[in-house]
Image (cartoon, rainbow over all chains, first blue to last red; front, side):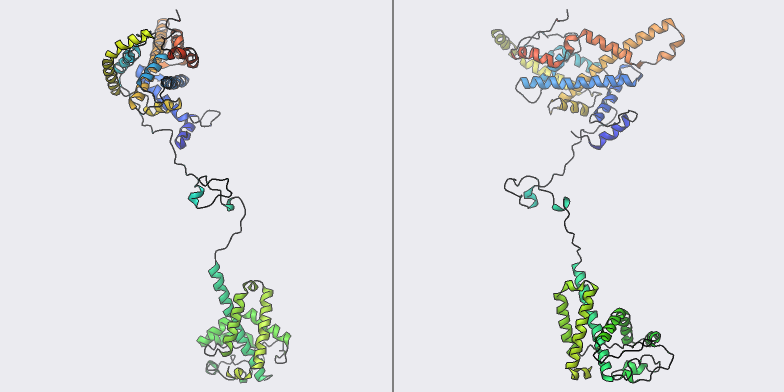
Length: 373
Length: 150
């Protein structure tokens, strides 16, 4: 039987000063009986009651109640019944009677309803004044609805082995007792990230291809010069389809690197913004590609003086995708087929190296398409 | 057994009256609300194996228990009053102090001892009683301890 939370609180209150303050299952009932006995004593005539006396008297009352139940159930069982009736109780009361003999005790066939016990109780009920219990008590012990473990059939699982019937509670999930791998549920984001990475790489490679083409076209005409530097040439740059490297060279002492950003911001062109963002984004990639170009050294690349860095002009030509499309598709499929290769910077460098070589080869083979771009 | 049969035939005629008396008794009992609450009674009766869905029976047991406790308390009260009366005779100074009637362990133990002494055969452990008297009950014999203490 479970008395629930109600029991423990009252148990703690009554046993607050006791050395062994552990709440027992019976504490609530004992507290209630104490109150009832105290009320009876008050009805009898006592003005106050000592604690020890109250405890003893309530204990006696509980034992009496328990004994009545035992005797009544005994009489019922002896008569071949499981449920007690009024005669069982009367007999039990006669056995536990606290009076000196009662009328009709020696007779067997007398009616129990007219026995002395019953008479005395009736007299008491009629004479004593009615003093109901002063508090409302919930029904106890409180029966809680226990959430049972679902069976195998309820879970929809088959029990492991034939020796386990399906109506038994299901076994716990393996993650409760074993360390199972944890999956990060962000597959869609990962895929989108991969696609975005591939797109950005394609753009970087396209721009690098442009660089390589111009280097090949204009040779040593001035790879270090840049048309972006000049402030008076924004119109030319905007409509630039021709020779960005044929503009006037920088006056000596000026640095190109720092001034690259200024005209981009001032002009506020859409293309310029794109190139700025791409420039910022691919600064490390561009550095890596520059290193690789220097290493490959097919003769088209110039070893630049250390204080001058080549200004890279990016162009996004969305219309013409003759060359770019095939490479894009090839790269795209290559990346999708090898998702593991994306992890790790060394692998990325190897891929970029391979792609750069491929682009160079393509550039050599198709000079006509280069002129179009 | 022959005696029993003859007695049975005689009592069957008065059974109707007895049933009526019984129902009257239970009805009159239900008018009285005992101080001992029903939930407490049901709890302890359930613990001891008593099984009955009828509310009137639990009320009967509650009234019986209340009567039991009231009897002991009244005996203790008599002891307490007797002691106070004896004290008042000796010392008049303590009269005002002892006006309050307090149930103490002394009075309670005296009352209980008196009860045990008077009704020893009835308070005897029930398990022993079962072992001794159960065969007699099965054979419908009379209670064997009436007049034991004399």
